[in-house]
Length: 350
Length: 260
Image 1 (tube, one colour):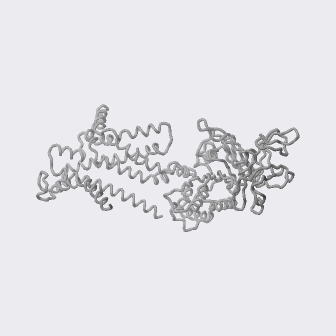
Image 2 (image 1 turned 90 degrees about the horizontal axis):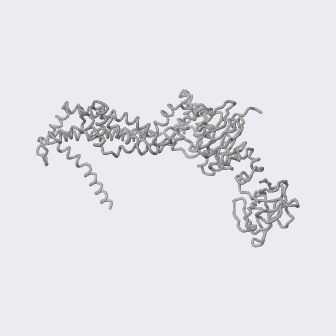
């Protein structure tokens, strides 16, 4: 395997008593789109600031192409960060913003102008925006300016600190796809952080999930979605049903907060069954699925193309999602049977 | 209602500017002493004032002090404002309080205290010691004025510039200074005007030199001539001119920037 472009060897950052980033170990491959997802306060911004050189690690090493860069200041690193606020210079035009890294490097004005127009075309900004005041640009246009400016620096790695978080849903979807296209066209290494799993799923080659300063799981979007390593990742990936269980003598598992015996492919004594709402279905008989529980339909929501049902089973509420073509057709006041198969559930050991 | 508000506003403005008008009237009479209504109009005192060598020296001394104070106060105030509002460091809150205290000291007391210090240090009193005295009071004001601008400044802009390869000096020249410029300019105006009009600090610390406000006071106490209101009017007009020029330039730069 080729040498990783970036290697984190036990990188950590402590602020007083708080361990914001806890000894991360990670290799980033050349040209990949890696997204770090995690809730607020999981340490992802601190991690990115260390990679960009805006914070110094308290421990561990950051290695760029075999060279330790812990103490290299940001202006000497071949990396560029697109800030959450975008940090466009408000006193400069679109063109001047994009040309800033070139001006710093002493590139002649004519060449800067040519390059700026090239980059504007790449990020799909009209050429007549060159002389426009950045403060008069819309949110989406400002994103493009920030991206073009980062590319003008010609970095080996681009970092993104949730730049799309302030953009409305529809435009965000467009920009996500464009960013993915630009990543493919340029072949640069992208490291992106976000708290939105959806965003990560659309764009990334690999996703790292961060929780309380640690990388809980790193893998392809498919991996993370299908095979979450623990309950945190499973729950972070979207709404899931969790049923804590304990093994019985007869090879089945007994629900702890849900009366019933469940089948599972596992050997552990205790664990959680994790079932996605869309993999649960309404059944007509107790033997129509591997695992079946009985409950009362207590709420129904429309999610657009899908319907979500809340089923009360004793003290617990299970969530079932069906497509519109497969809506619940039974008597809503009578007890309903909800079932799922062993191959659709995940057994996570405690 | 609108009329009442207009009337009230007019009244307030008149009350604010009437005293200045009095000075103008007093300077335009022919008589040696001020009498109202003015018996005989004349510009003689203006001619005498403008041609007076003594007053020329006074104005030059005041200008020299104000110019030196402006330059020094802006440099110290700029750096101080960054420490005040931009960077987080141990003791910042204490610094913020300590810095503001001199603004509230009674100036005559501050002047006297400085005079005692200059004597103790054996510094010969001249307009140079007055510059130092003015700075003690004006630097905090300028720091505060610039700090207000710094508070509205996104630190990520400096980080972004550095991240794209700019050295510290380039960040200062390309990002920090252009963005803080309006605050620095306002600070400079404050420094100039506060120094130009200052009396209590100058009184104690100029030694043999004399500034415009000092001379005005001295002549009021003994040896009144209509050159006092004349020079007073002149000084007021100069200050107003500086303010208009400064404000106009600021507005002009803003408009040019926004037109882009």
